[in-house]
Image 1 (cartoon, rainbow, N blue to C red):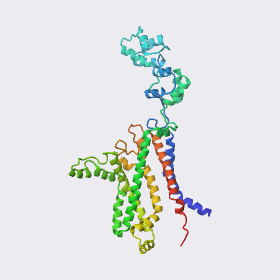
Image 2 (image 1 turned 135 degrees about the horizontal axis):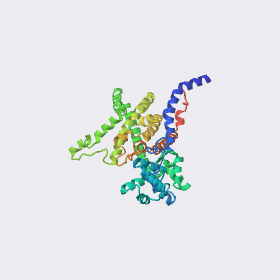
Image 3 (image 1 turned 30 degrees about the vertical axis):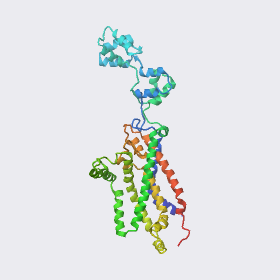
Length: 433
């Protein structure tokens, strides 16, 4: 028995590896990224320490001393060996030696004081004001826009500016350009008004499209069931075309149909109507087209599944109902639909999870427009992480959007299992032939 179990694990191991690589790993990576502030500005590796004007704005939000900000913005000027070396190379060595002999080690609180000191040089007079300004800037002690590769080096420079420890901790935290662990992504999603809009649009998208998928797919399956075999096969093939067509080509056909130069606009001109883009003219038009685009694709899936399930119903049940005088509607309502409980549950659950995470047809058709009125949650995650309008791709925030979808998908699956009484559907039949 143990040997048989081991053989079973060996044969199923390729499937387990596939599930691990392509299903569990992306979920784990999504959860990992969602607790970080990763973006194109932070990168995915270790960062540096940089103070710029944006950093100073963030630092001012904290309760730090005013003189700390002044020290950062106006760090002063100091006559040191490094600056003298630059003077010697850029100008002349005699100028460097004279500055060293008079002011070496001296500090000046602002540039004007240093310029006055340089004006007092006798052997190497600096006549032009522009030259004095350039030489003064060489001795400027400022860490603004200077990159530091390590925390220790950065902190040493802050200590030189005589910044206290509490303020240093704030500056170090805000100046770090790399990614760090955080739960602020969840707080941000909760506080952003746009998140609630995305959730509402997703509810509209899933509800209407799912209803269309299941109801229209069931209608097609039952309708073709009562048609002759060859005619039914032809109709099923035609309705299955949206699913097998490449999404780009399929959406392009819809655009041609709804554009201001498309079929509807051209036909409406014969009735005196002016051409317009029926897809992007208004949010209602955009949603109507999106539901139809996704609905026909999903309905074809339901049609095939329901058709197979209907064919599996024993024909004796239908013949017996006809003998009892049942009409077509009574057959459908009392025999066919009750027998489709499991296929309807599977289609509903599968399509719900698929619609929650799918956005390619919306991306190709409207890209979330007009005015982001068709921006569903999954598309918002894509735009945030991979195609941000502002240019800064926020991997962490986008992953948080995706993780929320994973959690909702799990909850929806458990709800469907409970609602359709999954345990009863998979129990052994009470009467076995």
